[in-house]
Image 1: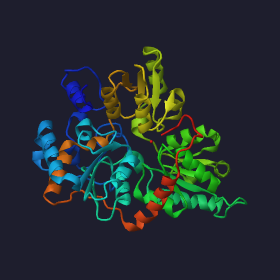
Image 2 (image 1 turned 180 degrees about the vertical axis):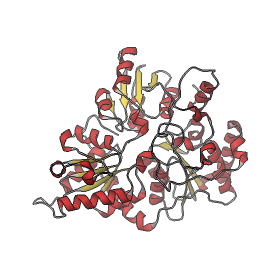
Image 3 (image 1 turned 90 degrees about the vertical axis):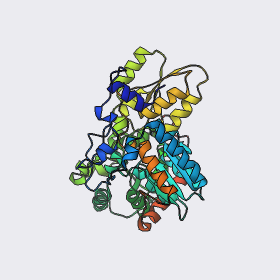
Length: 434
């Protein structure tokens, strides 16, 4: 089976039928690195508003931009062989195949941060993912290890939807409304919970304010933890993971108001916030927002007996219409567990779906969305950038290093350690994983 990159090129040249969300996907990421204004690049997040001050990637040398895939593959392998145990390469599930094949570990953001901890003697961790993942790896890395992001422009539009200033302002408004005194059971008015897909600054905010980080694999357990300590939860930045998880736990929808950071009290009445159990931030993942109930209906009509698996970052109606919702890891394990040839329609990033289809040819596996539209920011990591940073390490240079200041890392580590202690439970049957 062709990789997503190869398929996009074949569609552009007319060799293969199909549709992409942008013809610019066929260009190298360096084309967008040199644009005068920052952008997320072509793909699912290209319509999202990018914050001022977003990290930019400088132009990499021409030799990496013009090299063939075969040449880059050989140079990456040679650099890794030279570096040996001095470097560990981490690849997120959503990375392109041409990058993932060089990863020492493949997984979701938290699995990869933990994987890096298994190589404490590695001098460098090259994180083929996005910015918040590299930050988390730096927070959890051993002293002296450097964390490198091959393309600094590989951010995350969802993570950017909640910034430290907006969350701090929200918190101040909530404190003014709720006060700070605990109730008769010792529960404080509100506990902050941030999804792993957020900046180090927000993880630090949670650590400083009695809060916690969650992944989608332990979101229900984290909410239980928070409800034991607080009367309500402020959940950011992904509204859909928060809503889907809390709904599966029995929290009524009318007690989950949305907080719009551009409006006073998030656009809510005081009485609504007073009755809230979970306050949801106005954020979302553009990859998972693309999936719809109509796509599920078509999959069921075209493939009777199909099993529909979606990520819990999908809108509530999509999760409700699916057979199961769970993390990237959960989706992979669900397919691996199928003992008879089966048909699966998947609602998550196309690179992972395509890879699963190649890995399990006995099954029919396809994306719910027929339009090829990868994660814009994951797509900014290209083999050219990976070769560039690895060959620099061979020369003794550490390019694109991601460093989290200790003033942020210390409280962020507290929130992450709380998350580590929150082992996934069995209360929720549908929303299972990140």
